[in-house]
Length: 185
Image (cartoon, rainbow, N blue to C red):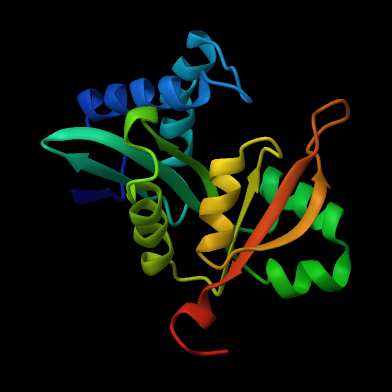
């Protein structure tokens, strides 16, 4: 398996591969997203490509894209970061968000290659390139394989009832101290 990292918007053929991976990964329960929701990834990638720290690693196996991830640097004023800050409160926000943190937006792996190290490679590609001291993500509570991946990679659960809007299911909010992975604490 090889990892190719894009720090600007990838070519349309690569974006379409990512949409296919997204549809396969997030079309399954517990997400059960529609093809139209998967298609929204194209606009999301365009929008996020303008943000600091934009990174899209793609794992290829036998020349075929089998997984991708998306991350950006979350800064004060960014919508998701502000939702996290409100949920965490002042002191935990200072610890985990600081002046900037890595926001992992998506990690998607084709169902037929899960549990083969693809997710770990994607997370490693994102966190090893990060210029922030911490990384955060949210995880669906019924996504057991994803939670296992994150916990196995040293992520901490900050809360199990994180919501960005009323009526939304509670998500796990997870964080990792990236200094610790370099042996610096």
